[in-house]
Amino acid sequence: MPTRPPEDLLALRRAHLNPTLSVAYREPLKIVRGAGAYLFDEDGRGYLDMVNNVCHVGHCHPDVVQAGQRQMALLNTNTRYLHDHMVDYAQALLATFPPELCVVFLTNSGTEANDLALRLARAHAGARDVIVLDHAYHGHSPSMIELSPYKFNGKGGAGRADHVQVIPMPDCYRGAHRAAAGGPGAHYSAAIAGAIDAIHARGGKLAAFYCESILGCGGQIVLPDGYLADAYARVRAAGGVCVADEVQVGFGRVGSHWWAFQRQGVVPDIVTLGKPMGNGHPVGAVVARREIADSFITGMEYFNTYAGNPVSCAIGLAVLDAIERENLRQNADAVGAYLMDGLHRLQERHALIGDARGAGLFIGAELVLDRATQAPATREANEIVERMKMRGILLSTDGPLDNVLKIKPPIVLSAEQAAIFLSALDDVLASM
Image (cartoon, rainbow, N blue to C red; front, side, top):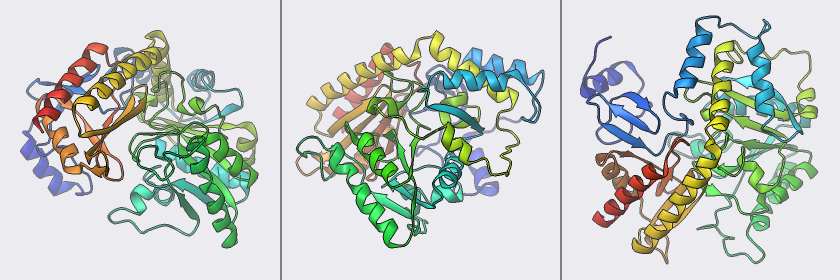
C-alpha cells in the first residue's frame, strides 16, 4: 500500500468520504502504530494517549493480538455452529457481574448493544416510551439517535421525539441541586416522576430508563450517591426497565469495581457494553436479567452475522485475561487517584480549573473563566488540547459547553506517564 503525506490523505478523504467523518486537531495526525499508552506518527514521534478508552488494555496488546491472529488462522464463522469460545466468553464475562445478570447477547458495537437493549425493554414492559438524561449519547443508529439529546438537540438534529422524555443531568458542579440538603442524588432523580407523568399524559407507558453509569458526553459527570437507587425504584414502580450504559466506563475502568453501576450499590435490569470489550476489535454485548431475556422469546430469531464469532470471542477472552492477570483494575484505581490528586493540586494553582472529577481512569477537568460565575472556558479548553498535542500528549474536550478536558487513557497508564501528563498540563495552563 502507498504511504501518503497527511495533506494527501485529507484531500482523498474530502474526495471520497463524507465530510461528516471528522478528524482531530487543527493539524491532523497520521498515526501508524500503537503500543501500550502511546500512539506513533509517521515520523516515529510518540504521543501519550490520554483519551483512548477503546484500546483498554493498551494499544496492540500482544496477547490480544495473538489471540485474534491464532483464531483467525483456524476459523471464523457465525453462531449457528457450536464453538467453545462463545460459551467460554459468556461464562467469563458473567463471572464479573452480580448473579442476577445472567444472560448474554453478543453484538458488534455499543450502538448495537443499546439498540438491542431497547428491543428487550420494550418486549418486557409492553411499552414504547423512554426516559434519558440530557446530553446523553447512546449510539448512532436511528433508534439511538432518538435517545441521544447530544445528537438530536445538536447541529442537524431533528429534536426530541414524542416517545422520549429528557431529564436533567445530575451535575454536582453546575446543576440546580448541587447544594441540596441531604445530598443531590434524590433531588435529581425526582425528575423521573415528572417524566413519567408526561408519558402518561400522552397516553403512553414507560418502557425504559437509559443512564450511563458515569456520564461521558455530558462532561465526565460522576453520579451523586443514591441517584441510581432512587431512579431505579421510580422506574420499576412505573413498570419500566433500568438500562445501565457501560459502553465507555465498564471493564474495570473505574478501578474499584468491574462495572461503574456497582459504585451506586444497584443492579440494573440490562447492562450494555462496547468500546473496550475487544480492545479495538468491534465487539459489544447486552447482559440482562433472566426474566428480561425471556420476554424476548417471541418466536422471532435473534441472529447477527458477525456477533459472537470465534475470533471476536477469542479477543474478548484475552482482554478479560489481561485485566485480571496484569491487575489493571487495581492500576486504574491507583493511577486514577494519583491523577485526581495531581489535578486538585493544579486546581489550587490555576484558576482555569473549576472542577476535577472522576473515578479510576475516567476523569474530567472542567475549565471556567470565573469560578464564581462558572463562565465556561470553551476556547481555552480547545487551545489547551492543541498545545498538549504539540507536547506529545493527546486529549479532547466534552460536555454541553465543550469546556471539559476528558481524560480516559488505556488502563495500562503508569504513574510515571501520569506524572508526565500532569507536568505538561501545568506548563500549558501557566502559558494560558
